[in-house]
Image 1: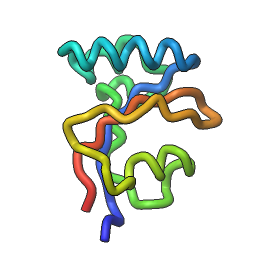
Image 2: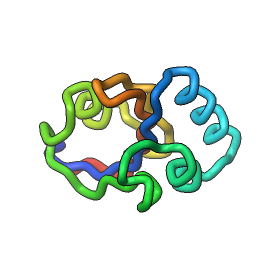
Image 3: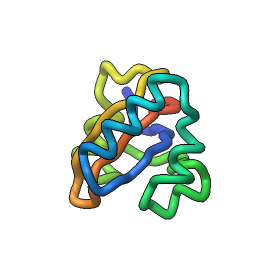
Image 4: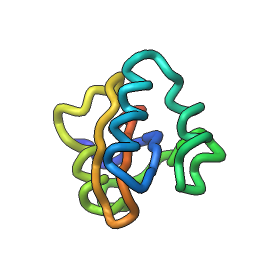
Length: 95
């Protein structure tokens, strides 16, 4: 059962901005570099690294996306809308 995860994320204000960044990542841009440049979250200093967190620690839509059974650790999830804005998420692992 997955109770813990580690993830990187990029938080932006609009869905269109999130989609444009996702396209860049899919074309080979570095996730952490884009996080440092574009994210509005303080985690941007660490390239969007949120470290390890427990299931239920994040806002519900974010949590559900990270712990979804089909989350592939190489793909970018999102845009995921929360009260903070739109997230792009790269899951590093769940355990």
